[in-house]
Image (tube, rainbow, N blue to C red; front, side, top):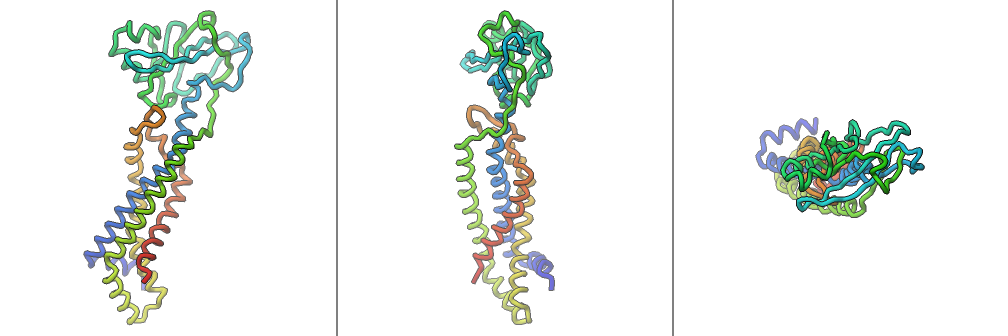
Length: 303
């Protein structure tokens, strides 16, 4: 007697069981997609900050001005009611400085590279309001060097003698391991707030067909089925919508990430890729979530 084959047959012929299975699958789909989003939040902060660390002038080491590959100076400006982050850079003759993420070629004196949002602002405003501050715009900074495309940032080229009060560097650094304790706490609380109602929903959906299931199981027991076989039938009946829901949750998760990327945090929105959960955590979630769901459902039917 194959438990899964019996479960599939029950789903085909019993409308109430199909309804319960559909509710379970929907609940597991929503829970899985949101759990993956919450699990990825701490890694999203790390990815965003590592991508933009160069904007704060992060360097591997400070060197003497006569040995530096470049001189940099960071500042903030305001125009048209917006705050614009700015980095002035002057290349020296002491070796070639590798460009930071999003920059193919450094701007020369009197030139600048700007973020897409700043480029739009320059186009929309008179030159005397914004554009003249950054010289000739010769390119756009790529997304892999920005917090988000809506960030207002300019990389302005200067001459070594005209930059003044600058920080000498020999290489940009991209640190890893940045942590946001507040966001991690919110993600942890969100997991608890999400999982508990979801498991209650699954247990309630399983009880929708409890009476009819008890009648079927009693018939199987009278026909000679062992208690272990009866438990296997219950688990199989609940496992089918659970597994379907977990798979659909993983498939739907990119859409959830795209939706969540528009929610700002720490002054900026996200790229959807920032919110991607590491593969090993996805595997753990895919294994653990069905066990939790099946456990909740079986406990709801323990009588």
